[in-house]
Amino acid sequence: MSKISIVVPVYYNADTLMMLYEDMKEKILHKLGDYELVFVDDGSGDESWEIMNQIRQKEPDGNVQCVRLSRNFGEHAALLAGLSVCTGDCAVTKQADLQEDSEIILEMYESWKKGNKVVLAVRRERDENPVKKFFAHLYYVIIHRFVQEKMPVGGCDCYLIDRQVIEVLERLDEKNSSLTLQVLWAGFKTDSIYFHRKDREVGKSRWTLSKKVKLAMDSMMSFSYAPIRFMSGVGVAFFILAVLMMIEVIIEKFTVGTPILGWASLMCVVLFSFGVMMLMMGMLGEYVWRALDASRNRPPFLIDEIRKNKEE
Image (tube, rainbow, N blue to C red; front, side, top):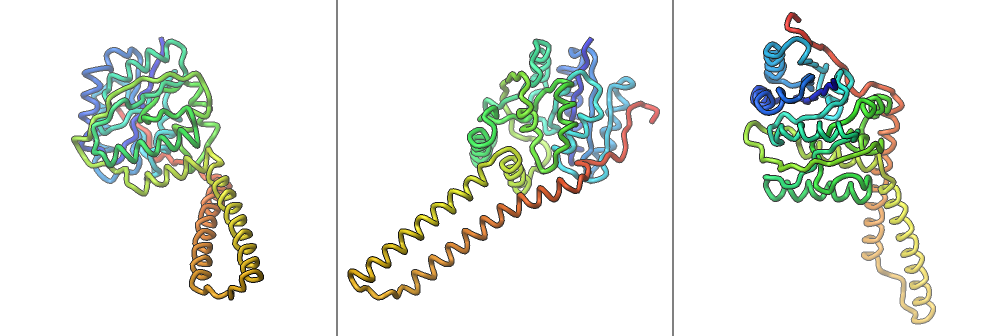
């Protein structure tokens, strides 16, 4: 009989963890057969670790693993940590914010049994404020257009992957990257399950603007040449514009006799060009930092503690 692992990254989710467990217990756990729950505490400062262990005490021996990282490494590192310790033939990632129906795991599991090694849970609709919906949609459109055409435009919050895919992710060992894009990059047979994403009713999201910006930059710079091509295109455009302006000034000087003054316009061009150059240097700096970070060969996460059985 096949076994499925449900990996849940936890970061300040003390108010939703028990509700999540009760929801899964009521709707899906008794239908899965052989399963395990893997909760990964990503450096939470609340009572998440204690509640994770309360859930462990409620489940039969071996059905729950509680993993605590040494500090906050980010959601993608927490997911990778959970995948590295899970024992299932396949694993599905599950958010702890109660915004996705637990029953989609059953649909994803059935799709896996049909031979699909990657099953994406794609948002068909989402009950969030228009501003969040707009920027989330914009992010996924950009990723779909410039980075990975397999990325659903609606976006996906969770996915199920086969043990073979998990082993590929462990070999990649990438930092400053997107785990979802790594899964799609692997190229295994993929299916999609569509669901309605609910608005968050309990707790406060820790998915800040700075984390969203970093994810967008990591996604672009780890899987696409688009930023470098953009820099090259801007450089070529400015070179052509500069040559044309120089020719125009010389022709006007010798044909019309217009004196070459224009200090204000010259300063505007200089300042604008300087700003563009600084922007390009910033982009190059992002690439240099990622290369430096990768060369250090530091692990993407550090596990502080793992608890599996009731006696521990």
